[in-house]
Image (cartoon, protein in one colour):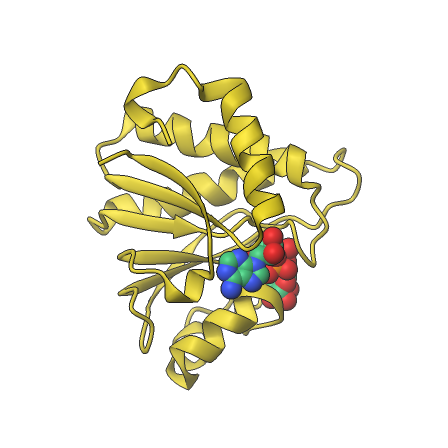
Length: 178
Ligand code: AR6
């Protein structure tokens, strides 16, 4: 099994043990992938999120997946893009790292990510993909869990940008190849 893959799809349909939600700091739902995950998981997800009392940008918190095929949802609020000089890259990297740490601590073997911050929050995809792939690859190289991580892009165009970034930095990575 390749430890890392990039694919196109709807993350609410994922068969991974955990999916990551590009949330906001209230954790009380929203539009985009957050709205889609809440709709697919059912109202129990909102109740579970209420009990968490929010989450800081760059941190991550776990809930059950309820009606999703995924057993867990790992919620992480990404940074809002403000031009790149307000700590956005470090915060975005922290989202991926925190989500993977939560997964590892809970013994979760497979995790699917959406492209955090690149919708409503406006983070440009080329920059976001560089940060995302570095954070994921650094984590996988130093941890046995999760065994597999996938980037689930909503469009072929987004996946093409992730693949381009992959080819630029990681094409030599034989153990993790796509
Ligand atoms: N599966 C996979 N990816 C998806 C899906 C899906 N079903 N739907 C959208 N995307 P966004 P953000 C992609 O806006 O930028 C919410 O209101 C989408 O194409 O969902 O982190 C939250 O509550 C894009 O590339 O998240 C926050 O307030 C990516 O998911 C705010 O939006 C992220 O887009 C968070 O904004």
